[in-house]
Length: 340
Length: 286
Image 1 (cartoon, rainbow over the protein chains, first blue to last red):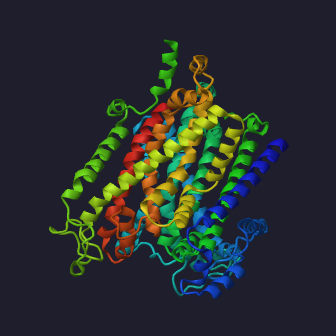
Image 2 (image 1 turned 90 degrees about the vertical axis):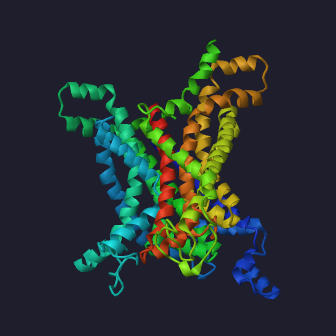
């Protein structure tokens, strides 16, 4: 186990280093002048020189890279050109809003995807299986921006069942004092059921949009991996011993099919980290995704660079957690006999 | 004869249109192929039958579907049907080019890594790991943001994000293929290593890449349209479905659904067509 962890930590560090390096040099390849971008198009030569000195742009590229890298190691992702604020600080402030959508969406997608995938696999080739396969294909081919707009049009504009895309709470409702940063949880801690309900209502449409898309890869992976497991000798033996169908499916089947499912959950998180830019933009949700979108609109490359590194690091760490789960669940991996 | 036999094994796994079109074996793939054929037809001949997708007429802004404008007009009074039909060319082209580019570059690199092994393999795989460490859409986003606007830049950005999948697929196949007898036979006949890699190992390692390319074409169309929706990559007033959705998004909230929901549906249906073909072939291999 220790050797497994050690090796994993080493490769993770190399990847994290790679992320920062790739993004830093990618942004420096930019054809435009970084100083002009910061000082504005009407700045004269003297102002440009001041800006270059202020941001350290007059130093050699490798020196800039060194200090940026040192900053990232200390959790400093740079300074936003537009707001002059710390990118790390601004991202952290927006993180709870994104987490609130993300956690509910992934949780719901698993709660729906896993049982339905098991059901489809247990009736392979039947009509239920065909419906699930078509639905999973449709989910994989879904465009988030269109789906969100469609739901807003029908469920808000036409039917009025859900609040419009105006953010986390309706105007006039004060957010609850911050404990976790999740409005639904914080409001309940305060005993404000009405505020929690408002926050939950605002969450419904963006979460529904994400769930429809996120459930597809989970369905596919659960179905595929279950079909494989259900064809094994030990499942046949369990059936032959007369064990109840449900017990065979969930105890012998699902538990052994869980590894690929965990991989699928990792993929889903990665998809969400990109998809939340679109969902948060559509629903005026003040999270990290909308921050990225504003950075694009304002040509704030420093903020965008910080966001991309932030997302990359999150994604890598998430994959480490998944790998450790693998190791815990499957002793063969822990002992270093991972089949590739 | 045995050598021919081994070389054929992987051929069976590649896309075979005639096999796909049999409704009993692959009902989903057949529906997908028919859909794709419709899109290709629209892209080829459609633009000849509709008006100018860029002609504005402010007096007719945001009128609903009518006999004159079958799908209504957008906020600049442009004909939505004309724009949607002309956009078919752009979106199909972009999706296919990205899939082919990512597959070609990725597979070539993958074969080199798998066949060469050693340090070359190690370096290539570490670079792939770093690219895969970003969610694809986010990586494409920052590449386009840095490269700037325009169709070629989006194609490069999205193709870069997808190429690692092909590197991994072909590498693992190449690793297995290079142990086969026909490789020894080719080496004994005096073929140089590069020739064995490209002429013998590569064609036999490509099977899974064809299916993957079908899936990637669909996803690439979604990504390009998503980037256009965010305002990076393909820019207005180009007739492209993602641009149309972005331009019409606010009008949907005042009831003009045809401006954004119609082009969005066209994107999803096209992506679904690619998905159905790719999914069905991939599923039948298990």
